[in-house]
Image (cartoon, rainbow, N blue to C red; front, side):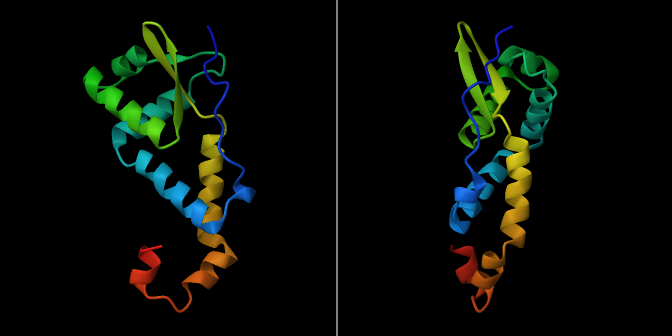
Length: 131
């Protein structure tokens, strides 16, 4: 099988400003906001690196209609978790290389960053939420 996971990778976390890290964390977290999407990521995470996962394979693994799975895949792609490669007439989906580790690091850095702690001092809750 052809490996469809060859191009995408997360940004260098060291090059991101605290504001960019917060924005990316919120976007990736949006991708995890539904149990079906978490299940899809679990399926893709357990695929061997040299294999691809076709939408139909994911549909067969979930108790959802094909259209629902496609919508969840679209959201996962838009939020930065997966990439898709067209292999007519199918689309194969793979996790973005290194995305799980990136997300874990992003969470740790965002919630423990000294600059973030300093930014929050003296600000109202409304000011913090509007950033």
